Image (cartoon, rainbow, N blue to C red):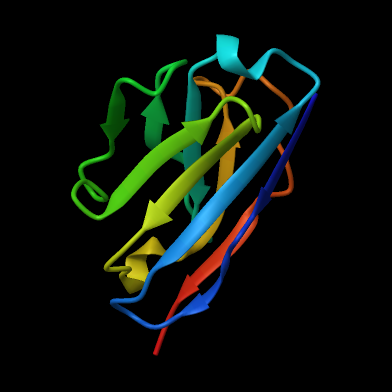
Amino acid sequence: VQLVESGGGLVQPGGSLRLSCAASGFTFSSYRMSWYRQAPGKERELVADITRRGGDTNYADSVKGRFTISRDNAKNTVYLQMNSLKPEDTAVYYCNVPGGGLSWGQGTQVTVSS
């Protein structure tokens, strides 16, 4: 099992980023997928999740209306489009199944700062 996150970077407040997570080693289309984030000194928190076919999504209140989770089962990839970014969105972002049952990837750093 391997989860490889990418797409992070440094962005100004109000900017956008699109994160990707490439999955391998398991039947991706059979699993709900989630994005998590961990800010310095804080616990990892759930940001968003998506059902197996992408028909239903859920978001943390802190990102609702600004972030959009999507997936492409043909590419074994889950995405997180992040708009209107705020400094408090600064964190390392990870993907996993709900509950974090798979081995964690290295994550991708998102820094929102002017």
